[in-house]
Length: 432
Ligand SMILES: CSC[C@H]1O[C@@H](n2cnc3c(O)ncnc32)[C@H](O)[C@@H]1O
Ligand SMILES: [Zn+2]
Image 1 (cartoon, rainbow, N blue to C red):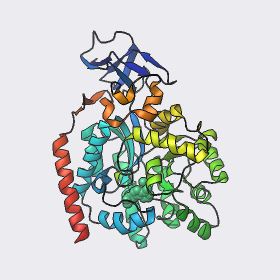
Image 2 (tube, protein in one colour; image 1 turned 90 degrees about the horizontal axis):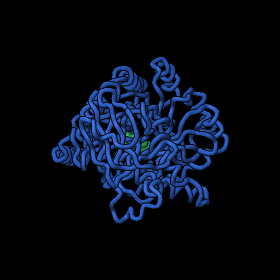
Image 3 (spheres, helix red, strand yellow; image 1 turned 120 degrees about the vertical axis):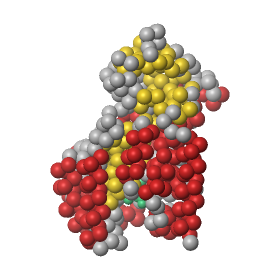
Image 4 (cartoon, helix red, strand yellow; image 1 turned 180 degrees about the vertical axis):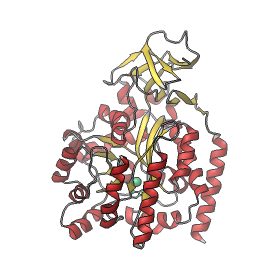
């Protein structure tokens, strides 16, 4: 077996205790072989983890990775105006090449932030999948289906694209890519498309992922048209199975929380996007107390405006306390769980735990920064003080994706140049 040892560091265990240990990775299986003292001697390759914390890689439960091209293009608007006045007109000019360049930029940023897995909904997903294969991360990918503003046959074609992608790419990149059927939301996909395509997605045995209950404005038309709350409507459409995961879940009432708990569907909390678009505050502590699996997502870089799960964890803790009016709510250990095991369970990727036999998806966080001194509590540091730039090494599936801040599978300079050129050309097309 070919082995990689991470030596001299401290390890964040699944129960969130920390101790000094080395980690030995079997690079053939991509799994953690052993955690314990002095494992460096016999390894084929070593990574220095001195003065560092070895954590599970972070998992981004909801993203539109190619939207890095639109970072900073439209800010300071609420969701509806942001999408209809700026984002959708620009996205109408996207090309597959632009999407691939934007995806590569996002993947570069994620590797640098210690992210090893993510869920993504967008267009030209075969190009996103190609970029994921090259970059070496794990992903749950799906074509975003929208029917609003389309003739019925065009909407069916879009849904067929979503099914075909889910069928053809599940298991790609040596199993690192899994797929899902991804209708955009309850208000942008019509009832008849749901009625026809949810059973077809079930036949493929892939999860369903959609935006739900993100803004108050989205709840009202569903109640008016269907006479029930959005998640009752979603349940009636067959959208709340245990493998399914919803992005946002901000405006959920008690009956909807009960419904999520009963059905075992998961919620991906996107606090930065929710704050920036002033969508509202998700009741994260209440969701967790009800036994619902909650993960953490950045959403796209145009509504965040970065792809750092460490930033997101801090945001989740801060806004969670405010939403619950309780400083003890959404505590440090909770947000570390949300960013690792919570997201991994929600999106159905095998990651999130540091133990023998688990996938070797790891981030190594340098603890020497002044902002991480002194080190009373490393879980507290992950939740409240560490930044993406503190991540020193990133490993996914046993492969080193970043060593001492150098991203190995991607040419960082070339990625930034291509993305800048594609973003400039995109905005020129959109505004001409
Ligand atoms: C159909 S592909 C995905 C689609 O979603 C748009 N999007 C980005 N962020 C959000 C958000 O917070 N709520 C709803 N929709 C969002 C993205 O621009 C694509 O058009
Ligand atoms: Zn989104």
